[in-house]
Image (cartoon, rainbow, N blue to C red):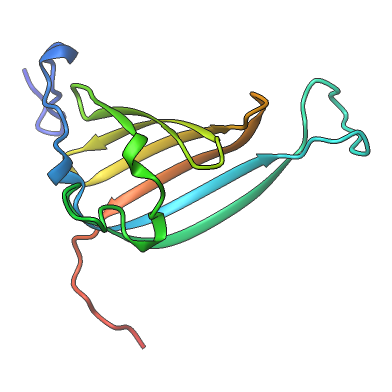
Length: 151
């Protein structure tokens, strides 16, 4: 007997689930981002000598995305060299990508998009020396609310 409060789950094999299309990522997104940057140096004394201390930054922004054919694909806030980005569009709303910017910073990221309009992203940046430069976690909500101006 099925309880009326039970949720229905997509029990299809992962390989048969829907792939996210680039068009699903267009529009306005409210992005909540947490950055963690390790601080390396001899002058920094840490309790655990195997790890560096981190500096954290939290931001909230509104980003607008259009289709890749449009030169403003990721909006002015994210106008980086997107020509070298390699994206894997995997089943189940999962994306994986790799990019190298003009300064040689390697960015490796993975994202998960849900049909509810939520995109969760984790990125790691590595420098030319192979050292971790930054870790980013983003929770992106597709804008589905009206343009009400609150006073």
